Image 1 (cartoon, rainbow, N blue to C red):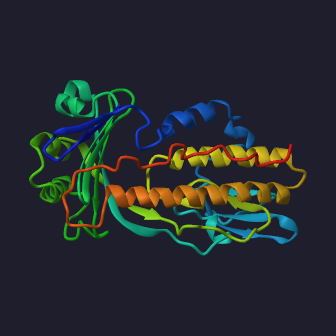
Image 2: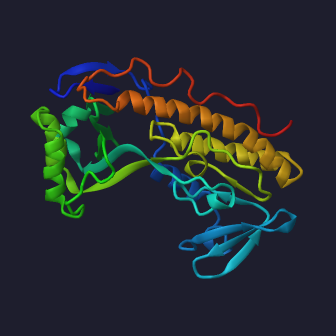
Image 3: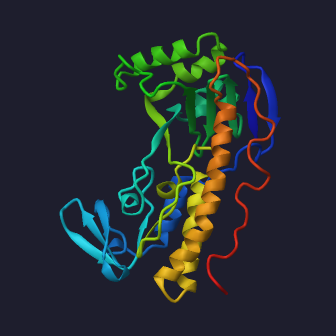
Length: 313
C-alpha cells in the first residue's frame, strides 16, 4: 500500500501495490540468495576486494582487466555490472553521469513500531510519500522493523554549502529550513532519524546511451543505463543479466551473443530512461509552485515489457 500525503499531512490517496512505480527487489536479500548458490571464493569464482581500475580491449576479441594491485588478467568476456561510476564503461563509451538537478538525502529508523510509533503510523505497511512542488518526503518500510526515509528536493548539488555533511545536527537544521511550514508529524522524519544523513545527489547517463560494439566487453544495469531511481533500476539490471546469460548460452560465439543482447537491452533501456525522466519531471517539477498533486499515471501499464528472446531458438 502506498499512502499519498500533502505537506499538511492530509492523506490525498491510498493506492494498492503497484501504483506509479514498480516494486524493486531487496538488494541485500537478492545478494544473499545468490551467494548461497555461488561456489566458494576458494575456487576463484568470487574474489572480494579485487577491484578493477580499467579495462582495455585486445586483439582477437578478448579484454584485459587492470586491477588496483597492478596485476592484469585477460578474459573472453568482461561484463561491466559495476554501477554508476563504472570502470568498465570507458572501454565502450565516453559518456559520464551528470547531475539530474535533484538530491536524495537518506535517513533511517530502526525498530520503528516500538521506537518511532509516529513514523510507523505515517508509513503504514508499505510506503508513504508527501510532496509539494520541488520537495518531497518518502518513507519505505523494509524488513525487520526498519524504515528508510528519502528527503528529496530539486536544487543545486551544493545545497549543503557551508555545512559539514558529517555534522548531523547542522544538516538537520538546513533540511528543516527547506521544509518549513510542513506538518509537525512529517518534520519528525527530519528530526528523529537514527544516525546521520546520507547525501545522494542524483546522477543520470545521457538518453539514449549507446556505443559501438567492442568485442569481448558489454555493460548491464546502471553501468549501461543510469536513470532516475523511479522503481525499475534493479529490475532492469536483473533482466539484463538474465538475458545476457541466455544469449551467451544460446549462441556459438561471444560476438553473436553480445550483438543479440545489446540489440534488445539498449532500446529497452532508452525507453525506460525516457519514462523515468518524465516521472522525475512530474514528481519534482522545476517550478516555484507548491502544488501537492501527483500525476495520475507515472509509468505505462507495462514498464518492463517482455522482450523478444536474446538468442535464437
